[in-house]
Length: 404
Ligand SMILES: Cc1ncc(COP(=O)(O)O)c(C=O)c1O
Image (cartoon, rainbow, N blue to C red):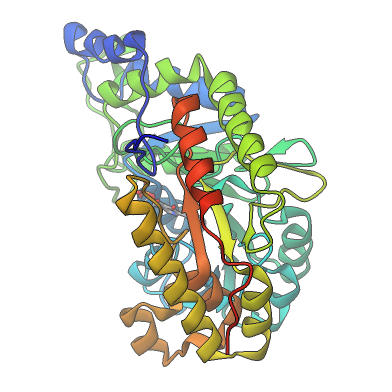
């Protein structure tokens, strides 16, 4: 097969979507105006959320949601140990403390069975993450949150299209936070969205993103006396999305279902092509869940990795990691980009030092950090590109490798 260059992800925009950014540029309304409102309305319609509030990133969304709920200094939040660092950083930035919880190695999501043991008298919130497009088990997490009176802020950065029991993520907890970074299915370059059913919380979030203004510029301009300035009822930020970004997001929402269907079709093709490879565990989608496939996270040498995680066996995890890295190098030489699926946050130096943590404290997150591999998956991926990845993955053989 002739060599192709296949990136881990590639932004795919239609000519109409590219054109869409010109509308606010021509109209002159550039910041949090009619296009932001339109994008928010489409987001609510797609997810089933009562309210959607656009902001500058998912990190901003997480920060603002916790702040608006009342999370503050000394409070603890339970965060999965395997996630993008932003989930934990927002807790630290609010003066709180992160309490990590291990994940289930099969789903890469927080293991609900380990949450209760992590709850203390200072716990205020659980931050489940719907990693890579698979919903965390919100039924189980909701039961725990209710029992202990905890807030749930969903990190749905990768959650576009992720559902449990037919309900879209982002509306199980008090708030849901989405990302529109270019690695996500819908992108605005940078951008984020908060979803909630709570009207009072939504109002507070709208004020906090806009300097604490009681009335937004759009409301003022649509009202009878646009020249009167708003009162500011609290000290807020400027975390407003631009209309240029929102126009792009809104245009992509017109084909939201097609984007999702295409990602699912690509994942199904991979699942089928790799079903017989014992050394590569493709992403699971448990019964009752619908996967959005923000990416295609696999577990490399799953048998050995599972056993090593359970035994906290550093040597085997190290060996699998070395083999995985060599394989990633080999694929890169063939033009195929891969990535570790994400990182174990408790192994990053800030968290390691602040909380005195060791990799083996959260063995599944450690194993996922060292032994996961994401393959290229993005809407707009051509058949030739996917066939090439499938061919090259199947060329590798790790079945007869003996580890220590
Ligand atoms: C799980 C998770 N949480 C939070 C974020 C942060 O999103 P943003 O870059 O929009 O701030 C990301 C981004 O990759 C993510 O994957």
